[in-house]
Length: 122
Image (cartoon, rainbow, N blue to C red):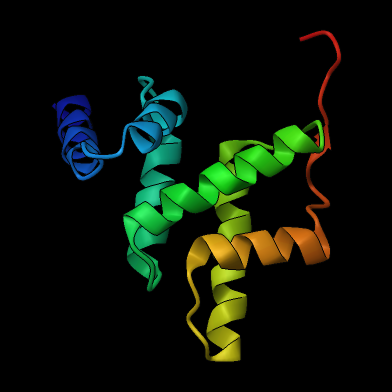
């Protein structure tokens, strides 16, 4: 029953991205598995922020691209946490910018200390 409810929430969330194939592909790759823990964390983070679900997914894609460019790895849960910190910094500054831009600026200015070098065995 609980798994069915989670799947229903995920399916409903997915529907809001039907017109954006790139976002759907990312969403399914990162959150489409049986374990919805990271997805639930994402939903909570979206609910607690001023930014849309679309802005969050776009910010996660930017983060993933940055990690790939730098040959770094970071769990999706830690990426969500980093973006939450970015949201808090914007909140503290009083200006609500576009979330993907905020994440880009944070990564350029501060990097991500928790990211680790990607294994060359992959």
